[in-house]
Length: 109
Image (tube, rainbow, N blue to C red):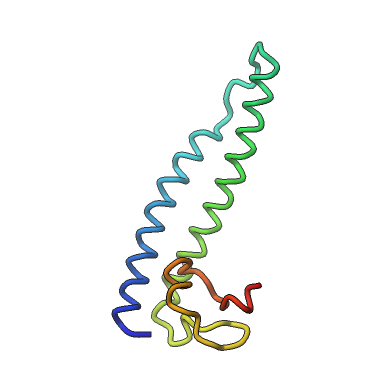
């Protein structure tokens, strides 16, 4: 991996971390306990379903943020960008799409 590619990945990771931090703040706000004692049963059920969906999105965003933080720590290591299963280099387009990827497409399938 060239230094230019490594810099592009660092920038991508930082941009994703910033975006995820904002998403997490928003999701934390909408998943706070609210008024589930609505008069309308349909509104109450809709609120509960939306809260469940938002809680799942929050958990997913937190997990991706942790994976990106780990990738950011590993990016300077010589083995970064190589599949942990087969040892082949992970294609740069995959790393740009998913900087936290630790497996090539074949091994991830």
